Image (cartoon, rainbow, N blue to C red; front, side, top):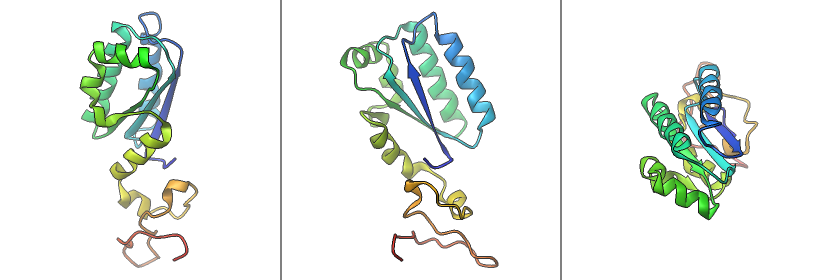
Length: 151
């Protein structure tokens, strides 16, 4: 996973009893990792959500976007999706940012990363780094053409 992207996984219901705790944990994570502006919020283990949970998600989306980032959600449990629609979470999110798998969300978010940051990195430790601009050689500006495996 490229360092500009953070994955948040919620296991358990997101309701009035947990929303405040989840919000504090999310805010703390965002303060510790300000460079991770693309959020993949994974609701795999969450089957229930109420108004307080929906309110947290909508506020989190707005905060991420106001900071110049993007918010993607992974959810596929039909009753959860119905609740997210009824509580206007998907309306705020946008259908294009709702995904059925982490891989799909990651693929969609790669077009949003800052390739200038990637061009300064020589590590290339993540699978997603393949095809991104090559690191600059000392004294040379970074390559704007993507690096393709084998080249």
